[in-house]
Length: 549
Image 1: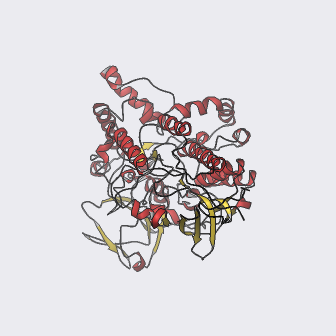
Image 2: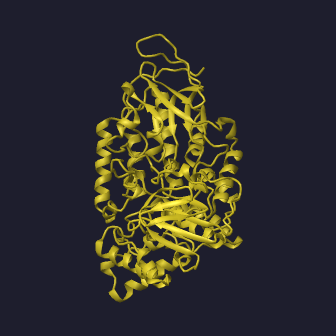
């Protein structure tokens, strides 16, 4: 417990319930709880769900699994757990990741500091006492000196089709999937959306449904996952070499345990370029993007070759030429949108019970009692699966009433586009931290989360020792955004800005377009974040107040 501290200019002692409130019990929330507790900072986690897991608790849809390899989609802070936990597959399923996070919570006795079934309605800062008051939808209130928003990047559903309440069949959103099994046997099923989620759902539902109609707005470059079960021998090798694995993760731009290829297109003989791309395609996962050519995301000629290679793969896999062309992306380069992994995705469109609808040519107008009304007429369905994405990265905090200095809301602060300092702090919101906030790294998330949680822990420890409040200036936030924009503009990714890319905010009507990620690589990001420690964490010397009651 912290000692009593006075409100600036008074002798009043303002008690708080706990030193830090953490919102969310997913990967970010659990890691933040461990970090703060290890530093003697009393903490409480408020979680909407009935269990830990975050996105892995809510997204129970068919086919849900990671796109990062299991042995790096985990925590690195517990070395014993790395040796004890046995991953079953290269890309673990939702249930396996959920089981892992439950095990972490139990192993470190975290549940005693988590309140489940609690939806945070607001977080309000009192400038006189430097105290945050967090209120739930049930009316309960909690006070703290610090708030850590580990609210996740993909929690606020986006539903662009109106009238779902009129549908007499069954509609499921991918992020609020029922816990009990869902049967599609013999049913007429529709899937709206072909982003990463829809791409995972479609192959499995197709095997069971009577008919499956896929509604696509923007086709994606889908990489073959090449998933496989891990053997004891494979697991033993990973555990033996884990220090080397994490060293690779720390050096690889996107936080993967990939080897550098030290090869660019211009230095490669034209006759061998296709062979390089073929090897990346066969390796599966993100290796096509990161283990073929180092300039795939920065050089237009290289990216054009890599993009056309994938389009030709689609044309070779999908038997119907018209369907194949609809599945070929032409309005953005490979990497211009988040690249999903497919588990026999393109092959699914060769099934007789699967059809593809291009909503650019035949838009969905609304739900009806019997199905969906399109520009070409009504289509009847028994089940509609909504996989239309999320108000990503910033949505959780703009849908919550978060108010900082002078009553400024996060929604108002981000009205012209979400901005933060390195994804961890927002100007005007003292002692308020975000995990995976705007302009944090576009990368394998667990290593990013660990680095950010450690940084937040150091800042809070410093604040307690120096009797100061953590606050970042507007100019610092603006400067970081400019740096992130420069990094983005140095890549070919900007070509995806008109392709409804959610990491640009372009998938949400009316949402101001801002680059929501740092695309300059995790190693550079980590170095820059670490340097803020040497500079005093960009702190402003406002005295703390709020002894723990």
